[in-house]
Length: 356
Image 1 (cartoon, helix red, strand yellow):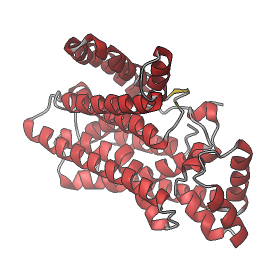
Image 2 (cartoon, rainbow, N blue to C red):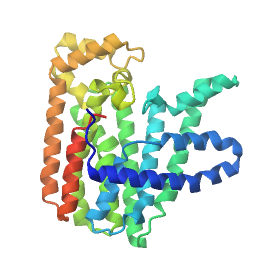
Image 3 (spheres, one colour):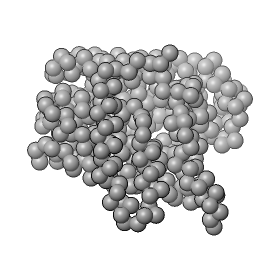
Image 4 (cartoon, rainbow, N blue to C red):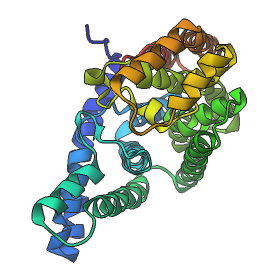
């Protein structure tokens, strides 16, 4: 049964979908005017951004309203900027992870590799696909800046929001590096896994979008810090839930292979908890298979059994519940209007228990 989407998120999705379609009609033609051969790049960007939950833009809009912002259309540009930054991160992440699918479709690099092979061009098709995907992500990153600057807010609020947006980007790049580093060094450090969860997704997906929205409404440091304190545990829960879905979810729901995190050797909290609990023979089995790009379905099922039987999955579920509870407690004390508090509670319940 599909998970109910909170009204605040459903409304934001509708708004952002319409605003993004309008933005593409303005922003993409000048790119193809440079050279008509750029049309496959702009088409890929438009296609990739069709659909999605729009969590980050929704949280920016909610942060803006929570801080007293009246007309949320004034910050549609920054909200779209978050969606395009997310697009850049996903496209680049798929290249790093060599992922075959995203949202139930071939990843950007795989699609361009297939086009190269079909055309019979010279050179390596996979190299071409990866190079073009990096450029597609770069274009999304550039367009994000253009959209952020369209905010119809006072100059000081725009600068405050932009500074927070810069911090958000620094943190997600740091989290991405740490994710790569912990995997390649085969780390079993729980604190490192939690740092990745906080930086790669928690701050970038939840707490910073709220804070950017509040800054654009002119909120001072006390409210912004209170929002971040309430959202940080929810952001960690969001990423830990993603880690669980990446191993135990349904591919039809997540839109990507549920063996990919295991094949990529990601050192998530789920893995570090397993390494703490497994006996030596179990650890050897996990370490031998983790990060194997040729991991078979049967081997992936065996690893899932290990993660389940040793209690690692249950331990992460408990951590998610604890983080969500901490977020609810902090939301209850926020100095915001009751309507904003209710929407934050609804989103906290949804993000902590999502299935895709």
